[in-house]
Length: 250
Image (cartoon, rainbow, N blue to C red):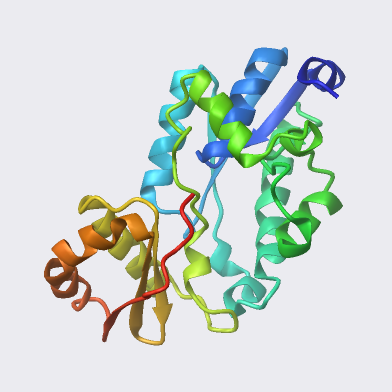
């Protein structure tokens, strides 16, 4: 199926918008093909501030209205307990809120940015989307992550080379309780790392310690900034460690 045929069947839609590569291109595509489209951004303790700022910038660039919904994900005891299928419960909470708000705004269809490269067997959150009837146009159209980046670049979207960014809860090991303090500490640590020039990395929680994961191309930068990183992050964590197995580049 091509995009024109797909959107002819879905002329109006609410887009669950994160400000990332996939949802940004989806919003661009929907805005070009739908008669009516709006973006819905959920602001919670799991998102750092820069994601919201990116979402605002992208919507302004594309020319789509952005509605911001505040959701207290830490009010859900199951999510806080951080089970292996935490993402399933979190997505149910977040998307039920989006669906409810979108319905009040006159939308019967909600899109999300799942793409053809996403493996449903590895993502419990995708099961939640399927159960709630959320539609994934990029997946239906067979668009892979690499293809979406290419098309985003051609469209002039600022997100085309934005590194993949999972929510802050993924920095905390499965089974370990999620707290506002841990999330805030992670956000502050990663914001600091970004200020030093790192872009594709993670600062993971290991007990009271930090485990930094970076791509191989940033190893030289890390060595250059090691003392600065150690000094700053030691104020937040017991120990600061570097994972010597580099992250895959995105």
